[in-house]
Amino acid sequence: MQTPNYRDFFQKALIPIGLNDRKSLKESEKEIYGLPSTHWLIALEGEQLPQIEEYFHWKVSIYPSNLEGAFPWLRPFYTSETVETFDQAIELARVLETFTQQDELNSLFLREKIS
Image 1: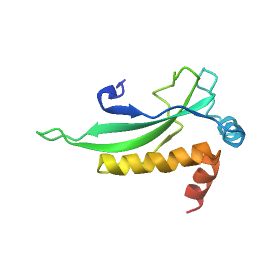
Image 2 (image 1 turned 60 degrees about the vertical axis):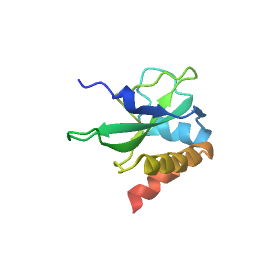
Image 3 (image 1 turned 90 degrees about the vertical axis):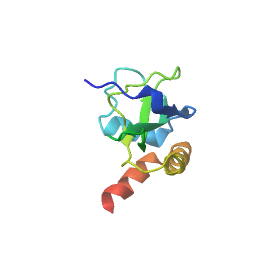
């Protein structure tokens, strides 16, 4: 089992899970994490590419979390495709943060499935 790369793991502030997203979390059977999920934790995670020099691609993950910030690192609720730069990952994290703050994370995933 590979542990996450915490050296290149940057988390944003916890965001309370809204009522719509909580319902979606439960309906999708993703609330099997073993802890009461009250917040979203959005993180930028670096994936080192196999090169001589250190070079990373980035992904943005959303984890259900409790108030103390404990989260199941093996089971993110959502993980994006990789992007090439840290700046792109920051922008994607901002977009996802807006959806979580507006309690619309569920609508984001419905649109992704439709398109």
